Image (cartoon, rainbow, N blue to C red; front, side, top):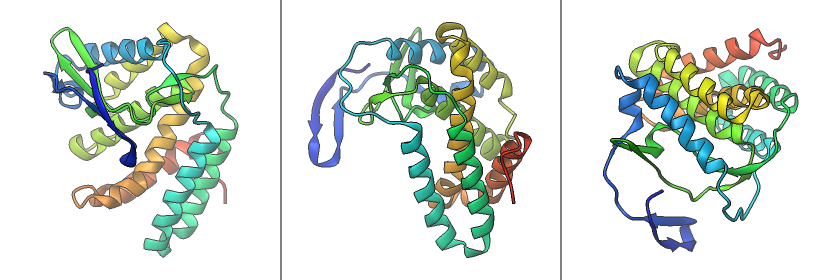
Length: 228
């Protein structure tokens, strides 16, 4: 972790000393991507084992409430999708409520490829302003969801970096135990559902909004969670 050098309470922000390295997002798409993914899994697992103060807690219910707010905003902007978004949210709620939560740990809560800098053999984790107590599967699932979105947007297929996704998940499960796999996959889907809204906030991502919605519907449909 880069050395903290100050806080800005009014913005819920803390400042860290500048460190060398390149974002993991670019490296994951290269030949060494699988090895980088495994190292990312090891780094986030190490964070989960750190004995740091946890000022607040984030639960599955909190995650679903945040998702509901974002999808409601999107439904106002695109009323023609209101029914689809309502079904999507219902399926996400069923997914979340059916997911067992492992023992809570200190988690990053905003973990995705650009939050990791790779400097040779050293990895730096950035932006801990949302650090809290929660399900370790959230960090890994959120990272995987971002990786799927990156694959779809940049490489044209959600599974284009599938071997990287599998390498990260399998290495983390090796370290943390099989019990966390269900929550990893649940949070990955919830992250993708949140990206349906997030994609509308960036002009270069808006062309992929409906593809993301279709991908979420497909994932939830396979689990029998998407209902009329």
